[in-house]
Length: 154
Image (cartoon, rainbow, N blue to C red; front, top):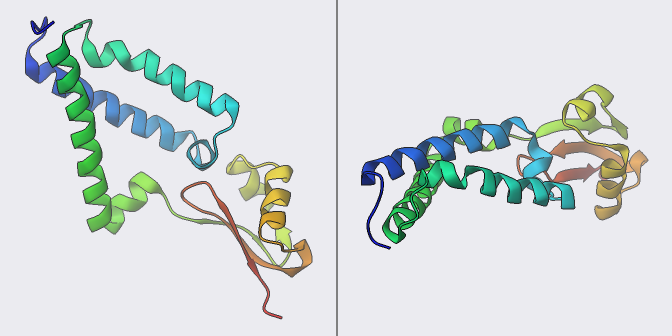
């Protein structure tokens, strides 16, 4: 239970590599993946965690090895959160920024497609903001995947 098959530092390196690669993959997969989970997205996240579990442990089943890997992931996450809070450039790299997807009641088809949004997502956002399309001033896809609608002043 306490005997590790790998050196302690290897758990830290494995945790760092897996964290960074998953962060890149999630960022490349688009904003909506993180912002609003569908049952399919939840399944993918669960399978991702299973797929990388051996990458983190290297086959080691010791208690200490698992705790080192977990502490590494929590530490890296804390470091990323601290760095994004202090550096706007790093924050944009990790979190992204809002994208203008529509103005004056018209959604930009090319931008909407590149953001992997569908018409039902846009209609749902308009309903959530109680804003008819003709009263929409601007629509943004936020970095967290939420669609924000601004109304024309009345």
